[in-house]
Image (cartoon, rainbow, N blue to C red; front, top):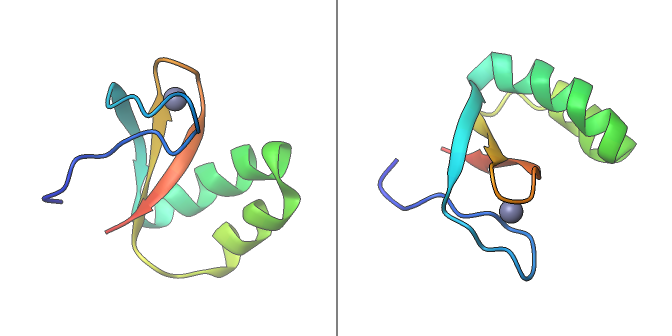
Length: 68
Ligand SMILES: [Zn+2]
């Protein structure tokens, strides 16, 4: 990754984030966490085979994924 990862949440935009998973692991983490936040995102995360990383924002606790 070359660009900085930033929290996508409005009014947060913190760059203080930490990776919690990459690639296939991200799909599992995203599926588990995502289904709690948004069922659609959780299912999409499990179905998609794209490489992406899951990040956790330390500022607001938001979990999000970034395509690599
Ligand atoms: Zn945040």
